[in-house]
Length: 223
Image 1 (spheres, one colour):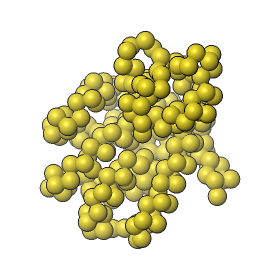
Image 2 (cartoon, rainbow, N blue to C red; image 1 turned 60 degrees about the vertical axis):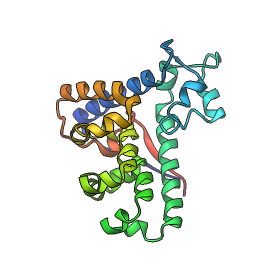
Image 3 (cartoon, rainbow, N blue to C red; image 1 turned 90 degrees about the vertical axis):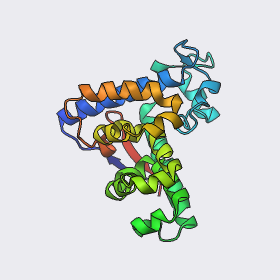
């Protein structure tokens, strides 16, 4: 097992904590459909990609500290490091599987990806790939003509809440796409809160990348 920890300055670590705390709270509120400050399994199913970790029965039980079969914000907060490591390894597994299905993915260029929009849709949902291939990803989502032909790719990107939160300047530009307002009404409230949060950020154009994780968390990679 390889363990890699994030190395950031104190100021950047503080900002990352602030960003991650906002993301966690807003993600929780978005899923809490009945406003009881608790999440049950049905509410988690509303966003299966975002809450993939908690949809596994064993993980749900470990998070549910008071055993009331519902998850509080405090209970989720205590599991953030474990969830991050789980998601990272899950995304690595997804990328390995995609590489098997799409030979050449590891060295893919823009033409390769544009000819495979169904692949891009999956890559835009993968936070790890988006971080590690930021320039290539930007060339894709900034191509208005191509995304207009393949709107499902932008939908996937807008639903990648971790990436949108970790990239405030890029998110601000993407939010100007009014077509996404019509296609993703379930995210309107979250987006409005995110835009307000972006305006309060001291360095709104900064890219947070892999620093966007709970303080002290590491990346556990099973070899």
